[in-house]
Image (cartoon, one colour):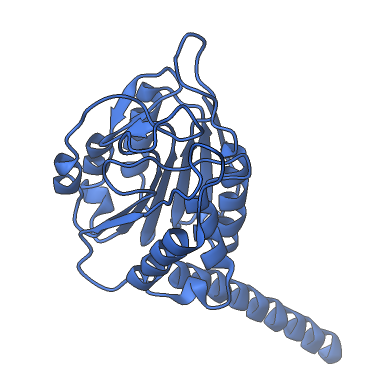
Length: 273
């Protein structure tokens, strides 16, 4: 597993985003390489960093690595928002590590019910298949395991929202230029006013853009669609991306003010002497 932190803040407790992406699999694992993963990762890093998040990227973790890293993240203090993005092959209720072993999403979600994450907004975006509807050996993200997804919903802690790339039972599309789900999320956050939206409004726009503006091509999947699915246990309206931007702007303004005061102070000292 490769891990790197793409943006650092000065020792303060900050808002964090963790991107867990599986592009390639161990030899002998009967799962295809997921072309386009690096495109999603690079763009997510750019957008989320600009919005004030400390971004960590974990590439090609095993199933055990995935569990361990989310456990560590759930025990690390965060200011007011944590984002977890998971991109891999999957099935309803599970995603694959690079070793082909499966991780239950409910296991990951439950970790964030910890005291450390109390009163913190937790957002998860899952780019993975949830069924076989479009599993024709073309570039989708599906593996063949039956799993009841109800437990995933019951395991979501309070003040948590989970956005799935597709509805239960269906496949999620992957493209060499990136996934329609995560690329559309980035589009919305980069649009003027997009990062200021309340989360439910932002997710509704994401649903609309993917459902109505995307259509698969090719002989096998021509005309096929994708419909994201949003599950929430939020107890209040949240503006996670606007709040982060305000935090960054506040810090910048404070630093600018401090610099101006320092210059003014030096000028006064020179004039007195």
